[in-house]
Length: 507
Image (tube, rainbow, N blue to C red; front, side):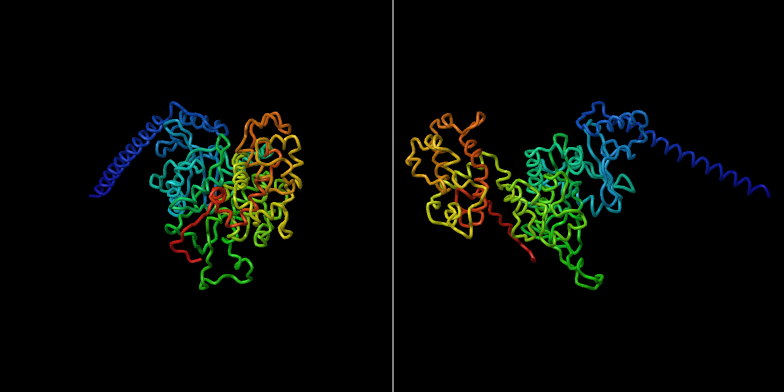
């Protein structure tokens, strides 16, 4: 009888050991199947595109071959979550790695702790899945979202880009050309146009250099939409929140709790929550900061970090005066204005002369010169001809335009017209506009006869633009202050009227 308990214990231990062995065998089979599947998914045709990350992808493929157990498969994309394969990081513990699809296509994968996926990563997925983002080449491409395969992390797979704007400016800023900077600024605004101008309209709310990506061809794409928001309902113009968001130095004026910053008292939980207003033009003000950053190889228009908030509150983008081009300075002064009403909508910003081609600018000049109202003694007429002491003509235009053209070329340009050279007044720019308009409408082979054209001049538009490069800009400045002119049929394409109908807006 004394041996029965021990015999029973030995029998139970044997059963338990056999059960554990079975579980271990099942686990081994699952691991073997996973390893086999991982090996099977290794791409046979790597479509190498990236220059900056090519070495990382080569190492990933080698690791995939030698140690497939270290590769995690997410929607048929292989990734290794080791530091050597990381290409970026963000707030809230976000990590970004390279990953390679079984189709051989290079991609990027964002990993975020599971607890934060509902608030951030799903929000980004929804925005990137919207037709606004999908249809735009200026928004990073969404591939796949997964918050179920891992108990600790969620994943977002995106198209791969070379680097962010901060890295690009640090490495390539000194070699940036003027046209290259203009292209990049336009692309930032094109990304915002995709978000702002079609329902469901979207706010980015976290524009900054590290959230702008640069692809292998040097094109910019907006990324990182974890703080982005859809407007609350169709036609709304404001997103209200009681929480500040964005990154220090890259937040619009109206999105900051100035009362809290200037108060000595801690906010009481029982106090009425603050109401911060996010609008499309909030993104525009930060896009103005980014534009300055691009133009100046990484500087901020509001100065060093320690004084940015003070300069933002004082409406003092003092470093704008460092820019030598008055055209882009004019654009950025509007985008950076503290007053929302002084900032342009994105459609209006993209129609600024800074972005217009030579042909578009001279088309604008011709349209103004062809405007019947220009013959009247109107505000535009007075300012162009320097007749209003309170609004003198811009110093960017020569005092006597006839002298700039010269006697011989003026004779050529007037040939076949209804006015002789002597009838034009060199101090009246309304006469200059009429001459340009008449020349464009009666070309008659005049270009080849002009003496002041350069050998490379290929059109009459280019000829006049070389002589008066700031004329389109000065006209734009004058006319945008005249509401009735902006709606003239021939001019309204250069001054878009934006009417964001508000369904419910508690401004």
